[in-house]
Length: 357
Image (cartoon, rainbow, N blue to C red):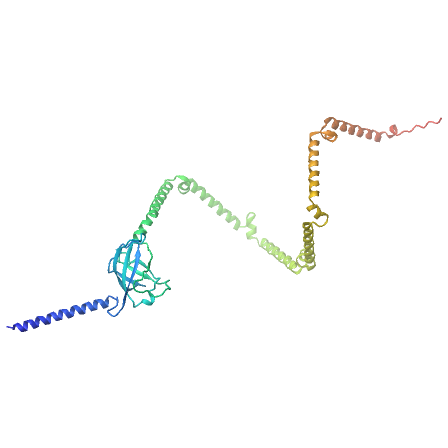
């Protein structure tokens, strides 16, 4: 039977073994957690969010997908109506070279059903390294619930659209409407079939050289004439490029170009002189007195034409008096008859009698 002293020593060894195993397990868990060790300095950072749904204390804090710390506190603070949720994080400084004061935090989810964690984005950060007590700006990111809520209106519209399409398809399948008649009308099918047959016969006639289009497609003579016309056109273009003929000279003659350029310069000089008030035309264009006289003359002519149309005055009566027209017409008729009588019997009207006293 073991003594009392041996039992106490055995119990002490068991206790020491359990204590050593627990300490070793704790150290291994702490090292394997990836948040650093006892010799890594840690700093406290804060961010403020409008909603911390799904986030819990102890949730990981990740920088570019790498765990750098954990969430230590989540609470609601006053004085921030739009972002009342304060999230306190404790992160190590192992990656402080990429953890900046202007880095941005956002709440992300690991997969569709994974836990929510704090993601630190330093892709656009250019400030100094973050220090203990700094506040990082937060950026909101729509979660799956926001996406579902935003898509409800779209889904409702899609459902209404599908119902309309279903009604339209049913309407068409019943043979109603223009499209339904096009699809299900046997008469239209027969007409379309007859049209296809006629078109096939027309193509057969063309291929066999019948009609007006047939010779154009099958006759070598028509092809040769077309080639000859193209050759003539090419020859004309060549002559134009060589400066031959009237059109060629118009394109290639430098003297004609100089004359045209001089004419344009003279016309420009003439318009400049007119705009400057030089010469008779320039004075007429810029002289206000002449313009007034011209306007007066136009007014007088307009008044005279109106009086003539009304039949006022002698000239107006000449235009409007039918009696004067009839008398003039009668005089012309009688004159024409007199000339005709003189031509027929000139002795009757052109006989001279001489009397000698």
